[in-house]
Length: 153
Image (cartoon, one colour):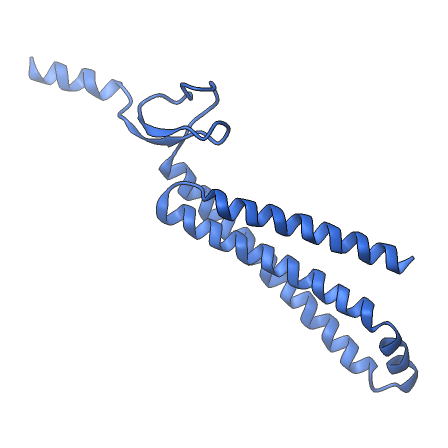
């Protein structure tokens, strides 16, 4: 008799911490569907895996942009040996500052992604404050890019 009850309990999903990305519902429930908005709920394990991949993407983004910035710097240092190129580079110093500003913002976005991914891996849920910082960095990068494009024309 006790074995039958144990088998019956195995068929039902066990309560687990789940969160909804749409309405921000969080709780220990067995359902896969949010009771408030009807969207899919994500388990803490699922959020941790998403955090792992987010940290990897942030590591790639930061590393790749740092490599591009290093490559551009190496090219510019080589071009400074030529007096004509050095004059052109000095005339466009504000553009270079803006380009390096964009490089820095993209590296900062990657580092924020790494931080958000680590947060998700440790706590099993998202950090809204870091998400807003990330969106602010995206907006700032787009704004600086638009200013750069305006001055380039």
